[in-house]
Length: 437
Ligand code: UDX
Image 1 (cartoon, rainbow, N blue to C red):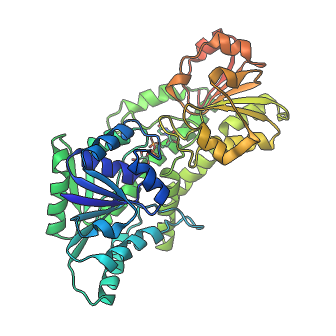
Image 2 (image 1 turned 45 degrees about the horizontal axis):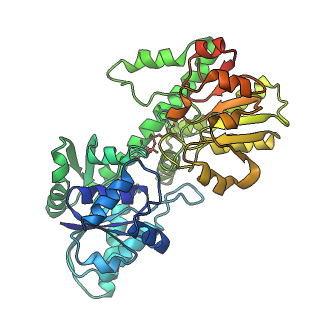
Image 3 (image 1 turned 90 degrees about the vertical axis):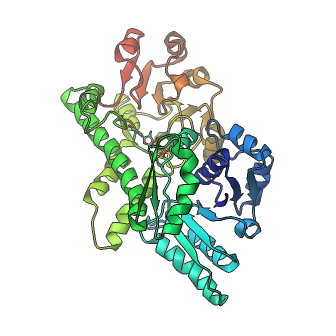
């Protein structure tokens, strides 16, 4: 089977590569010529464990191709996945311009049946717009060619993208015809050996499933952050509370970690878009509005703790930050809480020294020389008045505390991810504050 994937962002590139790995011939298409030239040479635009080797392997096997011209492969493939971006426009709605542009290109160039699958996260009703856009172009050409549209939202997590794609908890597919269901079943059959389920449903439900899943996960995080803040006030320990509630099978123990708020390319954007979709349909998502509000405030929690410790006198304080990416195993800085924190520190006159295992370059691109870039974790804390732990990378978990203590000017640690042991740090002579304990 041959398929095309339009858009070589996170989702597109991982999807294309994983389908190729399972034996499908895949054409990955992107308008960004530089990206495609690089990919052809095996240069991967993102950091994702395992991806580079998998791309090389499938390129060499002749199953994975990269091109800037969709029309080159359009009439060779049976299925086309659209995985282009849907950035939020000014009012928070998902901007569908790229999705619809792909649809129009398809309508202008197709010569035989095609199944057009939307993989990007798009509001309910987008598949209908895609169908209309393709049909409009076919009408202009005076042609009657059958085609199908489907929705196949992607649930992969950055940093675990390959594993999530190769053995997901489930695959959700919204279809409108038996032909589309048959094609999608054929495409996903090799993955069925890994024992997962493809859940077929109508298209609007599939589109909604993606938003509802992300909204539920974001709600858990804001809920736990709210509980953590109250724990601090009443003298409870959110880690114990998490264990206590997580052992109830109805709640489950994952995704209950309090911290500095969620970031990344999905949650913030999708929550905003869902609130907006509801509003434009005359409905108010009260819970999600609160989820967002709690998250915005939580991003300032380390700053507030620092400010309280120094009683509002932060001018000239030297602050070390460990971790910049919105979570470990990625260099993604989109909506990273660290950016909000750094902004506030700079506005208060602090000198900021940062270290992250992979996001330094991306951070430098965004923040330039407004901050200092350290060589390693120890270099970052030299003469520091405080160390702020922002991203829970493995290499931050067991530093030599005696070395850190010797290097710092003030032995103050503010842990935004609750990864350290209170007793151990206090025994090492640190003042240690975390979230909800
Ligand atoms: C998320 C969804 O998990 C995925 O299914 C969807 O396809 C895209 O969005 P991702 O953005 O890669 O994936 O990150 P995820 O691992 O879900 O983390 C999101 C944010 O929540 C991070 O900032 C993380 O630090 C935060 N988080 C996560 C918490 O604060 N506490 C938790 O318990 C879990």
